[in-house]
Amino acid sequence: MSTTRRAAVVAIVVCALAFTVAVPLRTYLSQRSEVRDQEAQQSQLQREVAQLRDRKAQLSDPAQIEAEARRRLRYVKPGEVPWMVQLPDDQSGTPAAAQPGTAGQPAPQAPWYQSLWAQVSGG
Image 1: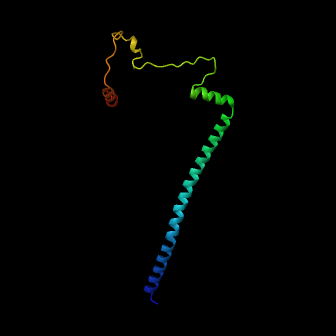
Image 2: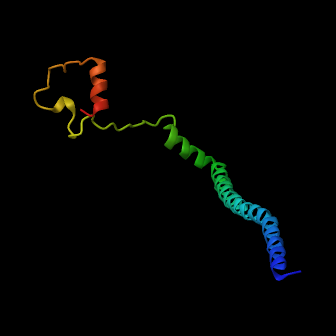
Image 3: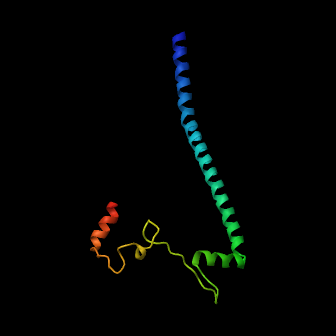
């Protein structure tokens, strides 16, 4: 056989091997990145489970449940007086009734669509 034929046969064999190895190698690399992503997601979920277990342990204490109910649901015990602080509506810090020139005069009521448009347009 001549060297040209040998070189051609070797080139064909090398190309065939390259094509034979390329597809499984590509599959291996993509699966490896998927495994890495799944492991990261699993570790995140394990952290969330640990946090939820800690929260469950906290809520098994009746005092903690009472504190949560008072804070989030604004529960009060019988005999307690609840206080709610409401801030004034305007931005100046003075109540609308205390502003000069407005005492005794009812504010003109604009139609609802004008109020809505003023809120949407920022005016």
